Amino acid sequence: MKRLLALFLSFTCMILTGCSAEQSGAGEKQKTLTVYSTISSDSERAVFRKLADSFQKEHPDIQVNVHFPGNDYENMMRVRMAAGDMPDLFDTHGWAKIRYGEYTADLSGMSWTKRLDPNLNSMLKDAKGRIYAFPLNQAKDGLAYNRTLLEKYGIKPPETMDDFMKALRQIKEKSGGTVIPFWFAGYEKSSFAQYYDQFAAPLLITDPAHRYKKQLLNGTFRWTHFTYLSDKLKEMQKENLLNIDAVTAKRSQLIELMAQNKIAFTLQGGTLGQDVAQINPKVKVGIIPTPAVHKGDAPVWIGGERYTLAAFKDSPRLEEAKQFIAFMARPEHAKSIAEATSLPAGLVNVQTDIFYANDYKRYQHIKVQPYFDRLYLPNGMWDVMGTAGQELMADILTPAEISAKLGREYKRLRLQSDSRGAEKE
Image (cartoon, rainbow, N blue to C red; front, side, top):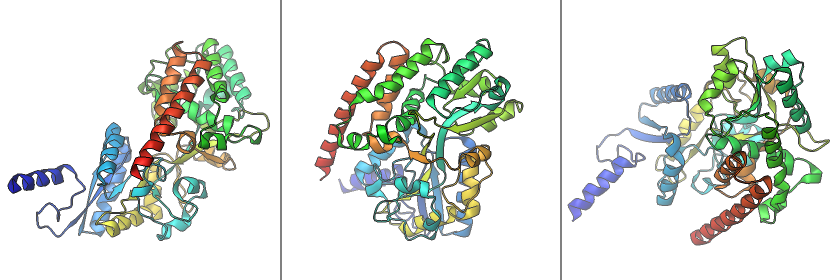
């Protein structure tokens, strides 16, 4: 029995790649750091691996094993959290405090924290000054738009929802219906979740006369206030301001269509602009903040942490993990990884040469609002919003019915979250 148990533990150690060479019984002196990240594109992963290799050359006694689980990331992390066996370093991908906080080491004593962009404080720092993760970059989401088309039709980038609706109608009219005013990749429900999440902030948070922070956080929010966003989306669909295949279109179609001047606006950012430029340099893609909803309010960036490195507080290699973070926080390395992802760096002393640099500079006075679901909604609501958008577009549910469904799921998921918290306590 003891032999079987030893074999089982040995096999388990091989599966859970957080085990070091020392733990595996190999007798090696080299320490192994295991890193898990949500970085998605091949080019971005290549830059990260290159930096990890450079770190290993500086620290020959430390081996860095990098893993990119892709779509399996969250499920893998849930299993590891339940087992209390997290990787030495891991990506909090927007949930540094809420989901992963109890597993992360406090990084506030590290020198780079003095240069942390204040826009990230609410996501990565708590009231006591504890810092939960190092930001490899930061998201600033808004509307990606075809600058070439807007200039051709004499349309100014919209700053309000009314301006946005007017711009969509003008594009449809002036292009004779050959350009899709607002394009969705609805086959992936996250496309609709992104719409709801981005516009929820200007609808429910940023305007003083329409601010529902307390109600959202204490569970008393009336979801009839949310119906506006579904009404607008349905209005766009009825006026043929969206792509006809909004529910079935795939993200892989976006770059080619934008390069053919067939799309005016979309929610997709990231490397879209440079990807389009590689296919058709004559098409210029820009990005603008999310338009304001209420009169007198201002546009906002929606963002926060994108890719991060958090250190597992119980890692036997915590000091080595912090060494790796310090290495990644060097200005030249922070610049390298941020530019690879076409996003601003998370440190104020790092200036990046990225595709949307001029747009971010032009709108540098615009405030950044944290992702709505991360602060105000229980875990699981992102998927609910995505499915709701698909059901709305497919005429399965009306805007009022969408709000009713969101309200029910909001309460259910809050109770589920509370019950789990009670069990843990």
